[in-house]
Image (cartoon, rainbow, N blue to C red):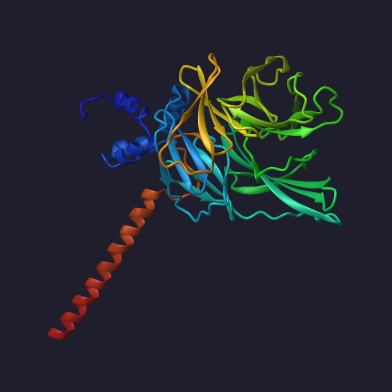
Length: 388
């Protein structure tokens, strides 16, 4: 290795997973400086995204687990380096970073183990009379400004009718390390589980009922993290939301709509972002391949694109064959009996103001050494006093 050109060493290292890279920082100072550099971190992330390698499922619910998407054989326990409760939700992943909806909020790189606790954020808007409030969070990456952003929407609804009355929106920027208030959302968010996960290229999406939309009675609203503007995206013309549970998801970078009825689930994919005519029906799945009333979430395609991995009712995983319309259950050792899953790419992306786990260990070791040194010095001092 000492005789290898530096460029070749860099090319080899950027193809490796995060765990060995963290270990290899101890090989030499040059390797440590290389792996910690911003340029290498970006190269490593770009290599992983282009080659679709080093991808895992982050499993949340009863603890946090990681499942290798290539093997899909075993769920490995991840121990967060901060206080985490099983009721704390985990957002979508952006370049390996997730938002943990704890109190306080935490941004966490699950594989480098770096994390950052966000400052508290309160609601300034006075609650309307006879209303109740709820807070939803969104997380995304603004590539234009190379900034990770958290969106906080506090909504107020009428206690009896549940009709939307008012809202307040704030954005946290990792670059500025502060919250600021922006224009309030002009529409009501659906009753989300604390956050919405549909993020594509710096744009967050939510499904909104729209009585004026005659064909579908609903529309997708897209919120751009860069411009902070809202844009409608039309659903497929064939979709009718009455009597059907409609939800949004992301499948390998494409917006998709999941229509769930009592007897079947239909998944649509938008092949060209923002173009209504590009909606394509991807699959229809029904009993006995799934249970009646099952919810289905598409996770990712197989490497050859022939199959789609589905999360069925947050209880089991299925590979669905698009050509043969068949399904095969995936048996993962150690998978909790109830879970939610997000696809996550391993990365070395750093979080400002965070303290890497390695640095923490070094600090603890230095602190222990200092304590031992002081104890020894005190002992020797006392000993010399006795002799004198």
